[in-house]
Length: 201
Image (cartoon, rainbow, N blue to C red; front, side, top):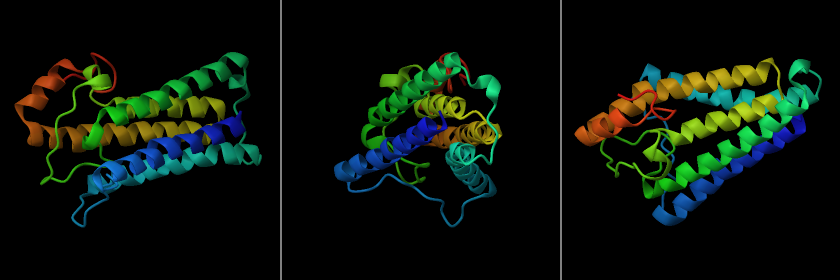
């Protein structure tokens, strides 16, 4: 399964990042990627570092397991877990792409600049949760961790969860409140953060 995890990781990066950026570039003339600004605060840098750490650890986990440098958790090497891993990964990848394309030209990789205004997206999967891209990413990451169950893959999953929680609660939600005011507050009051009905503001 670690080989499958590694292949799944490569496919996810190619589609959720590579394909989405290519489509956005063709439609808008920009990549949609927003890096850290020169005046980025400690929180922005911390979230960025955690996200990169999660991505690197997630990629290394199956590699090191294949090389015999990380010991797999044998208790999870059973048929039921392997099936769950594939199902979670597949659902997570499909959900990520659906949510990304549901955003249309409003999609960005990173937080929009204060001077930039795009429409508040509340259709498609955004009808049920405010952050379906992140929810789906976590599902896919859980599937990949189960496909190569070891201490590093578990750590990558936890770090990703922490990074996304910090990003959403302390970076994106304040920005969206400033950008969309009452419209966002009304939307957030009836829509869950990552799970339907849970985390409403």
